[in-house]
Structures are given as C-alpha cells and as structure tokens.
Length: 166
Image: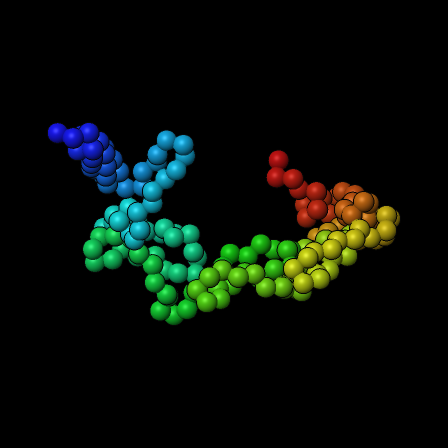
C-alpha cells in the first residue's frame, strides 16, 4: 500500500464520519460557533396549523401545516391581517409585498394635555407646555408641571381622578 492510499483512506473515513454526524443533527452546531442550517420546513414537524404559528417570523404570511406534516407559509387568501400598532409613535405598520413595512402616520401622536406632540415623518417630537398652564384629566382640572397634568383631588372628582385602585 502506498502512502497516498493510506492518506486517502483516512480522509475518506473522516469525511464519511463527519457527513453522517452532521446529517443526523438537522441544524448542527459546530465547534467555533458555526452552524449548518437545513433548508425547507424539515425542522418543523406538525400535525395542525396551530403548531406553526409565526414559524417564519413574518406576520404578513400565513403559517400552516402542509400535507407533508411540515410547517410552511403562504399568502393570506383575504389579504394580511392588520399588524400590531404601537400608539403614539408616528408609525403605521402594514404589509407590503408580503413583508412588514413602516409608513409615517402624522395622526399617531401620544395624548397628553401638557405636551405638544407632532410627527415629522416617523419621528415624534414632544415639547412640554409651559408650567402652570391649565389642563384637565378626566373630570379634574389642574395645571401643567414639567409635561404632566397635576390635578388636585377634591370630593367632587375623587372617584374619576384620584382612584388609584387601592
């Protein structure tokens, strides 16, 4: 046996061993932090659509359990559902080309009687009103102090303004 035959044999055995080891792991982690992801829905077996919710992380696509028992995604038949919105951030989230997108929403400003809030595109600007300017919260009247409405509790407004659920 020649030296090259021995080396080839060792390399072949190592390659076959590595292929078998990696092939049985799915998304295998290798020393040094590398990973080998497997493509397709192979890593997400399922029996019902409910087991596949948000598998792909894309709220604009419907996740479902396909006929092969694997999680998959497709376009919604009746269009995508509305995306979750954060109030007061000058942004409107919606689906565009099956992907989440953010658009400016000039009317999406926080409601605070002691702050002037405006949108410039998707950027929110909040400017506190002058201290001691009058304001109201619920049925209570008060004054602005550092961007907050301060309302004194009286017997007339105690239930609507001063109830802290204790």
